[in-house]
Amino acid sequence: AQGIKPVAVAGFGVGEFAALEYAGSLSFPDGLYFLTKYAQLYQAIQKTQSLKSVYIDSTDIRSLKQYCKEVSTAKERVGITAYISSTAAIISGHKPAVDAVVLLIK
Image (cartoon, rainbow, N blue to C red; front, side):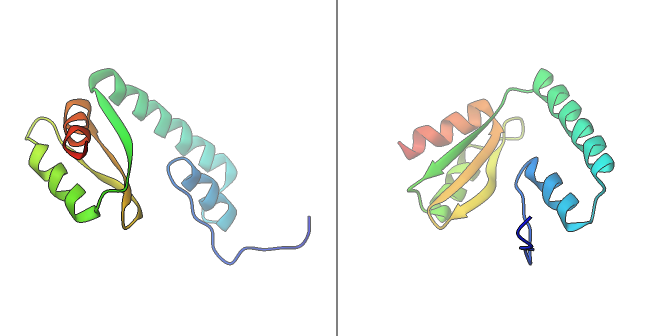
């Protein structure tokens, strides 16, 4: 309404769909379609897997990567899914592996 136009847009998670639509890369109906499929897939995965995400702060990213590598196994994996800063990130994976990383940090 004020005539202000951004030079860049970004989104995280479902916010990516809004950013793509605003940038003109995705139509609103297509965005709704993909968001619906995304939600259906996420719900299906949640029924078969015990997954978890945790925001980690005040931990060196290099150490966090090492912790994820140490606790991950062929059946239970954890990794950094979003870098927030040099000392903050989001880790995601199988619940037991995520919980093990959190215990290592504590």
